Amino acid sequence: MKTIVVDSHNEIFPHWFEEYLRMRLPLVVVRIDQHHDMNQDCPSLPAREGRQIFDYFAKIMPYLYDYAKGKLNEGNFTCPAFYYGAIGALYHFDPRGTKIDAYGRVLGGDFADSPKTKMRSEAIGGKRISRILWDDAQTKLRRDGGKMVPVPRNISIASFEGDLKESRFPVVIGFDLDGLYGIDERCPAKEVVGKRLERVKNVLDCISSPVFACLARSQTPRAYVPPELVDHLQQAVLHLME
Image (cartoon, rainbow, N blue to C red; front, side, top):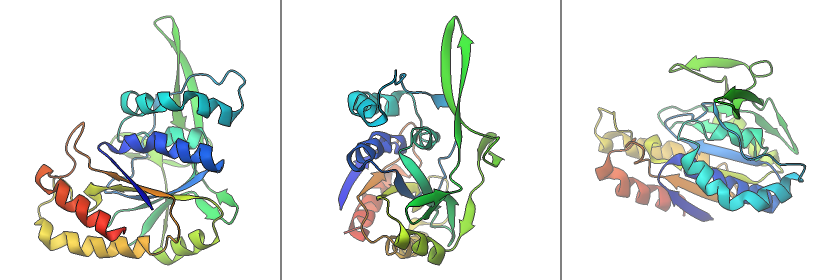
């Protein structure tokens, strides 16, 4: 399995679209992370101007790297991926618990209950600006830290495994190291990391053939993982995914 290492988690965005363009199928994302990263409100991509969707992404692919770093952040990069069709469902697992939050689910060759998005345009300073949001008319939202995010469905690991077993879509993994240990934690890392790795292994064992894994070190724009632990945690994750 190919493994991509990035710093901020939003840098995974163009890699999703490369795979979407290659497979011409929406992705199932398995996110292992302390945070859901399901915030909204980000700028749209340039207008398609009538081009077919895959021709459009092939043309702007180099720009997606700049868009991910300059226009998105570590909290809102998932919303536009749903909007443009690169993601069909996302399963979020925080290793501090034992359940999975499902934002949409796989039903064989289809998706159910995926969060819906919309574009809102407004004139600012004589220019029309378009931004991508969750569609509150079609998706139940909740307030989290002052931001509106979709309400997930909480499922067991066994249910997650059943979904993936029947899936006809490519699966990719997004692993943020703060899933193992965050900057604000009080318990010593040696007391909790091993247990969390075991829980992660239970989730990874459900994924038979992931296309790639993207590992986020999460040191910018601020550190979400203690800097002195980043290399150690990265090696532990890479070893787990071998």
